[in-house]
Length: 405
Image 1 (cartoon, rainbow, N blue to C red):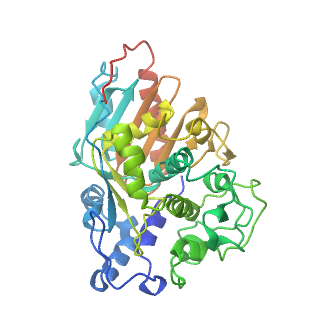
Image 2 (image 1 turned 60 degrees about the vertical axis):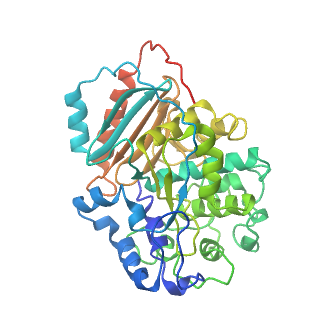
């Protein structure tokens, strides 16, 4: 898996010369404020997050609001109950071994709306939050589905430039919202974090015209590489564009819209925290801080179809393979959701964050971690194998426990 999510840190580390924001920016409902005094410190954090010690990861991943600016996603008064279900038939020793080997801070298995396994470690509690990294992309795409239901966006077949006029005349002419969601725009992009000349490294390094979003200012300079729909290329910058698009359509901060349409309506339990860049916009491709149970509820929302929250059929389209990623048979990419064999789907973030959904058994597994590396093929392989064990253990009859909102 690529280093998805680092771009959010680079966004927060954008130089003062690349921003048109005022000298001091106060946070909205949470997080630190950006000032001339702490801007350099924030830049350093952004550059060094991949090299934090294990103690720093353990200490910072559950408390990102102490280090970065952001907006609070407020929960409502009604909470979607996740009652206890029959314990999953898997040994505690095996769970302990997996969590220790993967530096897991939280693991939950929800089947048919009931909690069959829930474990915490590394100081995380049920009341705590943990950063999402690129799992946030799946939350952002859900806001597109909500905006279509609410009439702010007509269809994913509409051109992106209808909602982001500043992209007119660029390589995004003729690109649809669906092609942004599936990362098949055909616009040239380099997401190599080891290359200082890559787009992902340079995106917040250019001067921004007054009144223009920093992401848009850079993305409109990109050339075309291929015809739309002909090639999949992972582009965190395009998820950030989706955030700009939704914000322009609904005319409110993404955190506010996520609170109104998902957190309060579906019944999330804890407030969330969404990091913002120095211009005050949520970094749509990354960096939500969410409780473990609310990560599971997000998977449950997608599993259930999001009735009354997103447009009819939204999740059926969002969570099926819309593009081939080259990862092998059964693997693909939907609307900012990864798709897997056996009709499963999920969200993934660096350092071991994941939501995985199995529609066949109606099971959601959410894991938050502090891996010693941003990405690691062996850790990924072992996590996949353990998730498969959890899904296998969930097979068989289950008496559904009535849920209350």
